[in-house]
Image (cartoon, each protein chain N blue to C red):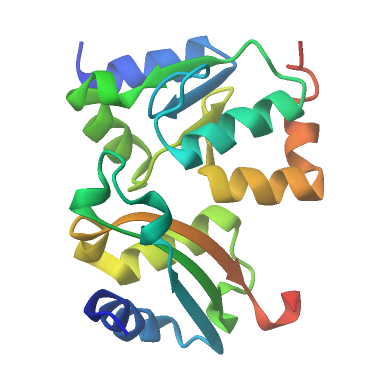
Length: 87
Length: 105
């Protein structure tokens, strides 16, 4: 597992995920402008912390937890934020 | 006028504004391209796009404006609705079509 994914996992632990999938999708974007500044990742996170929160609030929680990784290490992020009730 | 004022004016004077990388015809990023396709699928063809790659001040300014770290960003009647993941979820559930129904053209 890449170092950046390990760091993402550690930081997202703050949201107490019941389920967390992080997929490195960088290979399919290799060569396009911006790809140098970080990887592309697909994240599926299931957490009770998202209950009662809007979509914008849920994604903000993820961005906040990832912190400076959003500026350094992550170039693009596709997010699915679910609660256990959504499953 | 500050960059924040410019952005506020853009999103309040135009009903549908997409801040994106590239143009609607030539998106420079898969997420921006998907956002354009979703708007068109909702019947909205007359939206304003702002290419953040053309202006570094706007590119940072729009992230500050919504306190949202990523692009694209969709604004409808001045309100920030979300990025491409949220647009897609709202499209799948029919919420986006509802929000945009009076703006389709």
